[in-house]
Image (cartoon, rainbow, N blue to C red; front, side, top):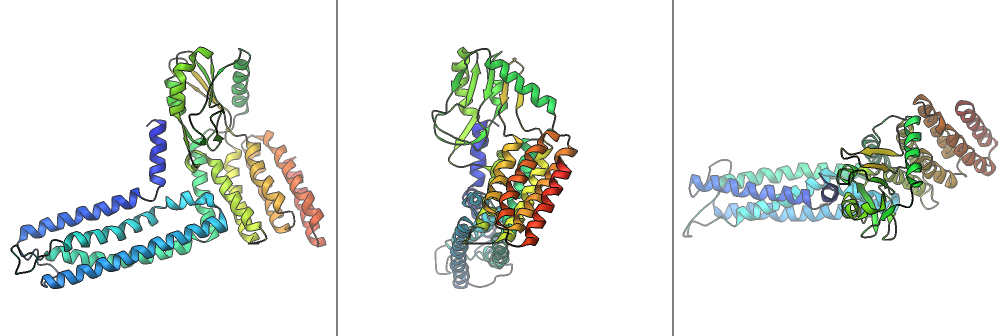
Length: 436
């Protein structure tokens, strides 16, 4: 699947209309199918469960349809309330993940779909005095069963909403998606010789002269980079440097791809713009840093004076630690790709230092007056360092020690209780002893 199609599919699945629409359409198809069975059985349909007349059938179908549209309105209202709560109390960047929640989409589709089913069956009911009397007995029985099924879906939806607005549930869901994105985007283990050799390749290209540049056709966030399509469609012998990363915001003046030799620009420009998908918002699937950003934002919001919830901040730090432990043993940047025709592409990536600094450095600046949160940060940095050492990435340890010192110094100065100061000093000494 090409880059534009993959980006279009991801945005489609993350929306709130496709799956509910498909579920509603399935119930409409069910209505036509059951009505066909009833019509084949005669004017009274299939005598199963329901044995009333046309008036009773109308009353039942109208009652179910009216109740369903009310429940659907309640469902959408609760969804909007939860979206507002998540945006204001946690982070607006988590809304995309909530809108893509499959249970919420299915429940909305079921409620609308059963309403559509009842309307389609209702329009086929005919009185005995009509020219073509018809009471679809099986269709009405199915409608009664679907009405009872609605109660189960409503209970499941309310339970799901109660879980969704919990900070721990939101953090766990973001963390799970982030870990999956790390495994997908950075599948290879850390190899220092590989990173040094690929960086050297890019340096040698720069010595060959000024490259041609491909600029974006529009402004927005880089959502997806289809490197395979870019390299496979490049001219033989072309050398490409993908200078952007998923999640970055670019404008029409920024550089997407640098090309050597410069005369290959015309052959690469259209392919590059198609291979690099730019949208209005970030997507976590190809951008693990976006998941780290969401967890960081939730922690920062929890530390704000208006909310003052350090427990949520510590929970987010725990999930961030789990993700960065995973990242500590992976090869991050840059990656090298070759085509059969001899085209070569170096794809820029985020450094481990950049990821850790953007997470713990920012939280540490806002947590200096809370010893409990700072201790959790130090424990997380120590654990991440152990993961890096186990993976052979000892070169990543100094940044962890530097961050620990930068976080601890203002916290010790701001600590009021002697016990807090001693605890912070003790944890800092553990970091130095284990990571130096």
